Image (tube, rainbow, N blue to C red):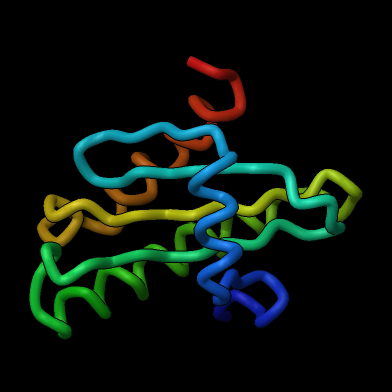
Length: 116
């Protein structure tokens, strides 16, 4: 099951706002920016540039990241504490396994939440 339409960030203005005001954390695979959105649901946006690889590779990375963050969003309770999350894949993400991306995302979400 994919992320629902109301769980995705698509507008470039929303991307800019999160990147400008959100808390960030990164590692060799991903960079994550998070900000409260005042909604009942968490929304996620993905950025996978041409530096990551060819279109086939970028799409594979995006599919994996969508699944990772679908699981993260499904675990969050529906309340007024929704967040907007922007996930930027770094070139090393092209060679990472699903499990590595999953571990990286989980670690970075915790890092952003606790300000470490």
